[in-house]
Image (cartoon, rainbow, N blue to C red; front, top):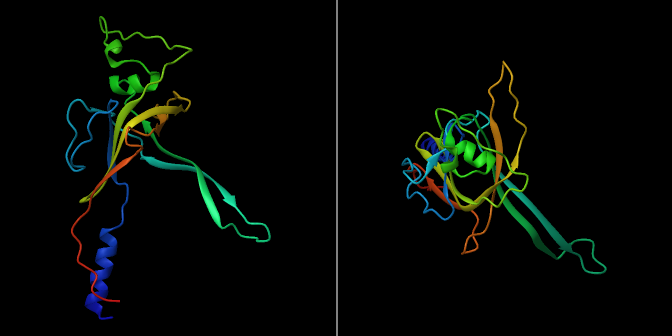
Amino acid sequence: MSGDLLMVNITRAADLTVIGANGGGWVAAAGTTAPADPSVQPLTPWEPLGAISDDGLVYGFDESSQEFTPWGLTSPFRTQITKSVRTFKLTLWETARVAVQSIMYRIDADDLDPVSGVTSFAETASPQPDRRAWWFLVMDGDTAKGFYVPQGEVSDRSDVTFKQDAMAGYEVTITAYPDDAGNTVYHSDKVPATPAYTGS
């Protein structure tokens, strides 16, 4: 392989890697249409979730399977997926943002309008389902990876710590549910143009 071809292939490999250098999250009513381009800022009705901790975004896979091994054999000849769940975990730092309070406490944003400068609400012991649409974005230079969840819900909330030497934040996990088409997450990636591989 010539030196020039090797350099082309190294450049192409680097272009296809992703470091979660930056990104964001947005929320809207369940079923809201996905943004068309991951490199363009979503507009209303999408509401930004604001600053996210430097832990970034964790895209989770929770899967289980059942193996079937025939009598007399020691290796399975078939595996059936019995559970396949997608989750997104992130820590939201702008805890006073209405959209963030709304998803954290499962309260409609309209009920969080301040009165005389004071926002008041109560947490219920019997919360109702709170499905919403979500848009998550990971950026690395000219590369942008978008994740659209048409039906998702906050399924886990971590403890919130208030202390002098740490930023208070809401760590939440969003579980993606199937939409009418049976899909949980839609991917929309924008990657830089790369030279075609021309050698072996």
